[in-house]
Image 1 (cartoon, rainbow, N blue to C red):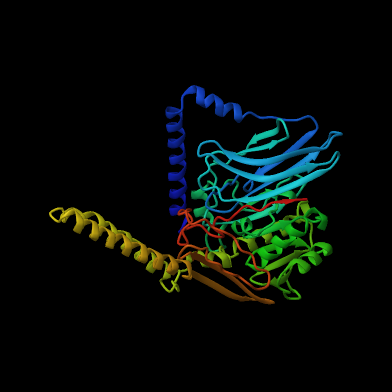
Image 2: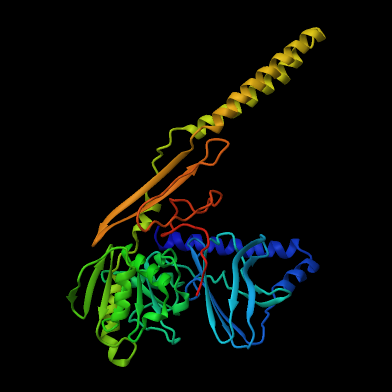
Length: 460
């Protein structure tokens, strides 16, 4: 599961996408392609400005939950109403993100997390009552990926500037450079940049990051409650947050949002470290982005390089799922196959072999077979109706500062004619659905973090 295996998988995937694109050009005539192009044109509306971001700073990894964020600003004097959707014309995928209302002179944020392993293109469209108000293609096949031997730090800043950490890689595709730089001082690091409205409402996409950095002067109002909650839960699951010591409001918000209380804090060099769950909050006192912050940036880079690569959620993927089902699903499947197989044998094959018998005896035989099949089907239907389904689960519990962090992988199978009901209870429960058909999200896959789950919507 190192760099070379990860890089080979990414390269084969890119080659496959190129081959698919070439095949589509051959299969689709020019007229059909022109219809696609007509639906993919950029469209803007006067007074409406929409910023859209997919993935993290140019990295879109379909093997992970993909964050998609929109910031809609209405500079006109009219109310803008529409429905925001994501579409993929190759396979016909479409996701409805819901209705959006933007009053004059205001802004709205729409955030979503998607499973996009079968997406080769992505078009975001805002449709009004009669026409399309806005459309853009979101770059999903960027050729960049999260390397397994690189620690990633996310710099959150609305000013648009990038944080230059000493020794950090400039491009995640530099596999050779990452391999050469990793050594006794830890892994190679790369610093990505995001604005506050891009921070997701769930820690799933944040698991790809080993660290998150807020510059001095960051304000608590830059993120809403759901975003601070996702950051706090990410820290509890093993993330490391760097924040200025004078950001008291942000620290108080994190304490309020965190499901675990954490420690009081210990001073170490220039950092005051507060351990929360499996992660920690590092408070630095010197400026970060100015010239006098060179020593602080160096210490942050050294700390990020030494961080562990995996969070508690990745332990669930690496573990072997132990079956605890009682066999109800498999038993009922065998009974159904046996019933129809026996009925086919008796009513078809055996009836043909009895062609020498008289018509009266053949009719009596068929009546007996049909009557027996009706009785057996009724009994089998009742058995299926009241059969309980099976469940496989694997839980991982790790003790951290202030409490324990527990994650689980649950697979539920219905054993008959009704749905199997499963209840997950406890404090701070978060349940994500992974469709069974998504075979690429194997629990033994080399990807780290959450598998695919259903989209989440938040408008603020």
